[in-house]
Image (cartoon, rainbow over all chains, first blue to last red; front, side, top):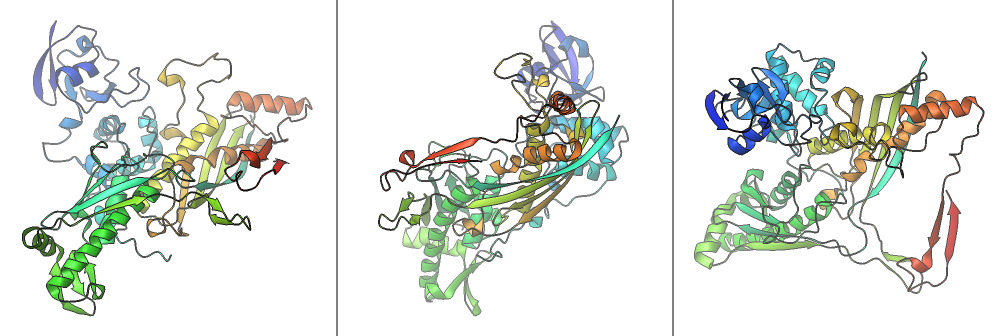
Length: 172
Length: 368
């Protein structure tokens, strides 16, 4: 059946069976690859997209349930070549290691911030407690979301300079 | 409802890479004609940061800016060989391979630079992409100019290869003394936790976790911190939550879905403190040792001992679920002696060990 959805501001028509998960339509029909297929039964959060501004697990949503809806993914967080404040915070605070959970975290955190979420770690943890990350231990993810909530600004050219680039200082 | 607090501590030592022999990593570096550096290595970055760390090692060894270095790990078939990303060997073994390759490139840069400047290579150093005469900084030539001269004048590709491979462990046949030790570098760590145990439900919350890791040299401290923090939460999960077979060897209640395997979430995150110590190893690049796999080992025993401190029962099977805590509390209340403090017996049979061809018939049994 033919359906119409809006993805990151662009109207798209897709031909899909009505119960096809939104995740599969995005990834396989529309080549929108930021939502990741993780557990595919709602347990991990990495497929999270915004449906009319609300974070939803795209693996559990049949495409027919979102006809006419506005879908946002990581591709739509900022104009091409640019990053949102949250994405900059993610880089600055090294909030990604393998990166597989990152898309879902970014979308859920974007909704949290757009709904006026604070930089309080406990509040953030309540909002994003359903997202699993196995690499970072969540510490740097919390740091990044807090920084974005505070409206910190980031100069990413100095992020690398913050590393210990001279490593000869250790006495052997 | 009575909540009890307790504290526990555990320590770990961890050998870097596979011990003995047979665990090589190789790297090959070529200098482009403008001085930029291409590194071909097989160590795959799965998010732990080996690409960044190896770039830092190459940049510092050569004396060029880090953004001149491109790590190409895209094709493990055509790139130099690496045993793989495991055993916490990426920085130590893979890093040594790129360091050794970079040292060869550095020597060749200095030799050609010496010819062009008419100065002995031993009197030259490379700083920030320029070959400079020691003590006479106005006599200098860019690494890019040297690479260009090699390409267009000398007809040479400046390149270098490096292989990190540990020699086979051996004993002196006369004295029995170790001549080449079996281990590479040992990292050390300790983890102290504070838990809160609910006597009524058996629920355990980790309130605070403090950890100290000796990694030799934190080549990239932020990424070391990331490894420690990530390992801490994995260790918390192993200690309290994660189980594929809750009633092993029975597969009852195994759960067939992702959501039934409980991984810690952000809401389980305790107050986390990470301290990095740098006690350099003799063999690692810039003294570095392992961090990767050791990072989730010390938390489960520390949590177990904190639970003992809180409510006086030892639970020796992981994960320490509320059910296990309640069963242990019940057994204690009923006066059933704990079955858990006997430890296990380890039998060391030297005839089966690697040194058997050198010393014949010793067999030792000791109880832990």
